Length: 157
Image 1 (cartoon, rainbow, N blue to C red):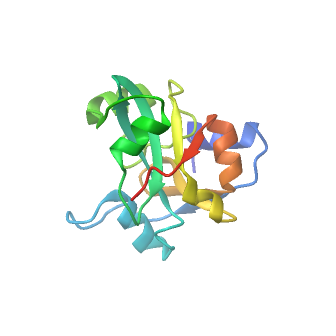
Image 2: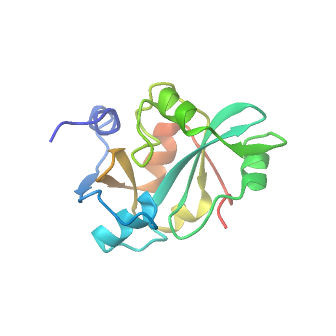
């Protein structure tokens, strides 16, 4: 299995992590995060999706549980802005270097401001995309926060 930029970041930093691969094919009525949860049999509160939004025009990464949704107003406040809107998928892909459904908060082409939902801190480990569809990485939430220089805030609903 070829290492993604996200996995290389973890290896360089010597962060303990576990990779979980699965078949990324899923029903069209199911999102990428939901597909990962179903395929891996994981707790949807412990698997996090990586979303890219614009906060006052600045691309910003939001990491929220698959079980919920992103609160754009809360993200704006957490990022020190006034208004947040979801980013255009093409902008998100071009800036991060990952494809939709495989965007990882780690190893992005351009490091973006990142906010992780504070619920992540209630778990010993969480899962996030490892940089491609069908691959998740499990790691301690504090390690994710440190590596992405993220803020934590209640941004999920």
